[in-house]
Length: 461
Image (cartoon, rainbow, N blue to C red):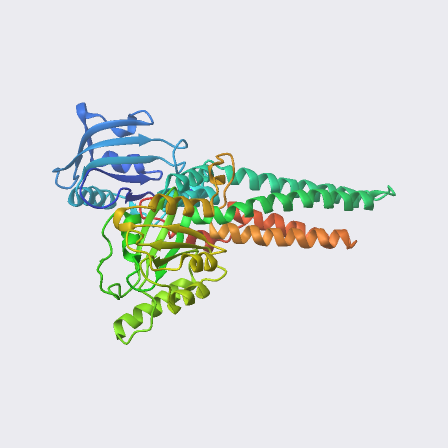
């Protein structure tokens, strides 16, 4: 498969020591060589693969020096895209990196589309679709654990398991076809049903194992939507600041200071939290605060985890009790804050309301109880099991949806086998399972979906 030569800036825009402009395609080396003047007249066309060279980028039209550079040359097929790749390391200023890019574009290269380098790696057979998606997961990883999951997927851990299951289904279907083609033996039908039952059960159980990891994997990939709720002035903004370890929210003794939902990402014991500090939920005549309260109620419905904050120095109110009712059936950690002040709250009543939830006491002013809270968050979702490095985690929503469909298709097939449905009908569900698993790794996926997936990548990846 032949493509034109593409170029893009592969490092974030802004000031820095180094920026990288990447070229990929059949003419990558020739285009870079037009502008490169190496020490001693060195030409990129003749250098060995996977070497780096010092020199200058020259504008061929004016013969002026455009930039001082280090150029890496990597020849196909041992590159990320399986094409010739050139990476130009220049100074990390906006003007210098743009000048180098413009020179490349005016001398035969085309500006790459978002994710086009990774797309070419997929289309050229360097990686499958699940590995390509893991590249973006790795870039976006917010914790070491999320990074480890993405690395495992990039190495092909999920791909190998999916391919193994597909091969199992394919082998079973081939065996069934042989039995159908040679029906002269009396026990062929019985053997065929037994084979379908055994192999189908194995595939279904393996898919189920993957789906059991999907909850944790999705949290690691996308972050845990965590909402801090409570009456005004119980310490919600102080809790946000404590977890973020920065004064992001205004903290005062005046109720209703937080008027809107404040969003921050924070790493708590390896758990990425998308932390939302809400306006205190109460009845109010203030129009602006009322809008904030309504937004708080909305994000509450969409949360994965609720941090319900109570005030140790205030008696429980009807509003507090109503909050417990509002979060019923959800994952909740109840935080009794301001334990440095005299007790007014009825802790027996709090214990009663918190029977189904974890309960933590804190004094955020004195930085007490934060460690216990972080431990409660981590244990609530992972309970240590995330540390199993040999496990295959499914973190991508597209993969999870396809696995659920494959599980249902195989479940239908097994039910049909047990009911004695004709084998050629049962084969349809087995084939459907095989196709759905293929969509995960890109073996049987529509071109429009591929375009959509790679359009979400950053420009130079």
